Length: 501
Ligand code: NAD
Image (cartoon, rainbow, N blue to C red; front, side, top):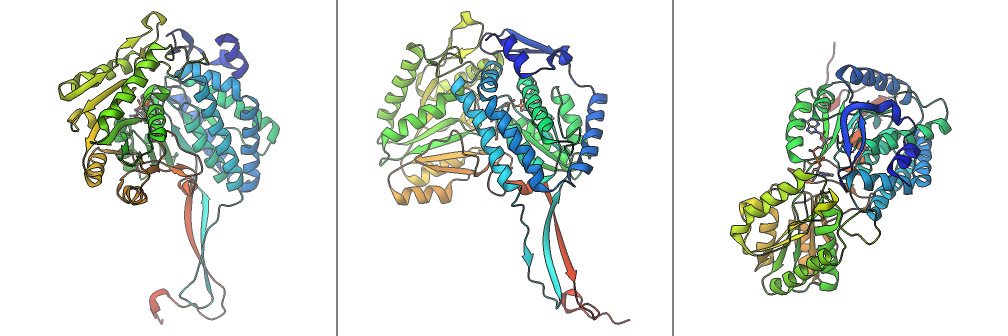
């Protein structure tokens, strides 16, 4: 199937979006996929008005009925999983197997949200006053602005949208300007679900906004979007967070990571090695949860580095880097030339401190894409440049002597997303879990990837947001404390206050 055929199958109204200045290219060969019109400020205004109108209707629909729409969306995703996965691969460059995984995440969060639609529980709290009952009610919040990154072009929307929809909130989604086609494909699948659902799904319930940071800023500043869920770099979050706060809005920030795996002398290397490799080079190192640092005990670091170095060299030499649609490929391209140049800048910055550097150069230049041989850098400390996230297959291997020192190195970066320890020692595992400052702390599991059932997100410059499972749904609702008096005499005041008139 050609890319044109795939686009026609997934986005029936694509022609209505064509003819603008936003050139969308595939990172596999830098070929143009489409040129799209971007939304103007006036277009966004129309969409926000539609979202507000949709909110007034959707919040009156019972939550389990709202869940039915998300169930139908999950069915559409199941039916179109392979096509959507191919488009994810074509537009953002991750290998097809990971594209399928990303769509599966969407299906999983839909299932989760359907169950949730019958479990939006509040508390009943014992009142200090006689004949009073005190409830906590969770009510729909309003239209949610979703801003997403290129590397998870569809899953991030679904983590937000599936929950927001069952919570009673319409969604306005600005995808990355590098991946707008997958967003239009998701909107088309949503529209199919709505057509099967019935007329109680209002127009404007889910809309896509095509554009760059400028239109994103307009969303961020608009008080009619009480929640802005923004996924992307810490640089973006630093701009978005204060602007949303300035209008007393709520932000859910999912920002950059600088994730490490600690490898102790007791580690089972049969478990540690594949986990480090997947985390380091999988998705061409372009996950927020990618493994950027391996902090290994000094007694094992040389042997571990040798094995990692020979594995990444073999990957480069055995044709496992290349076209992400090819089933034998394990490492696809970087998103663009700028990503490759940033990787080279980081390599140059760390080189003076490095004991050994393996890989890191450009491969398959004739393809037109920006493919990089994964780089492994052996260090004897953690220089300044390691503190910055480099979104590429670049991994630093750093020694430690005591577990306390390993955690100090681990926690000394500004980001706090995912972390891991490889150990067979229960005490080491528990010490790590209590001292890792990250939102995710894995034991004998690499840093990369997470199940949707847990709350996903990180601390410090990762932004503090939580998405997907557990009680993340509370971000999409407003909490109301509601005491009711059901007695006959004059009700008592709180705190024993008497006020006789
Ligand atoms: P990016 O920050 O360049 O862009 C992300 C989105 O923010 C895009 O849609 C962009 O248009 C928008 N944007 C940028 N500046 C903005 C502004 N001032 N106001 C409003 N919108 C703005 O990120 P990227 O290169 O697309 O993605 C890679 C980054 O995303 C990495 O740092 C990665 O770690 C992070 N990421 C984090 C998570 C997470 O869940 N923590 C998930 C995926 C990616």
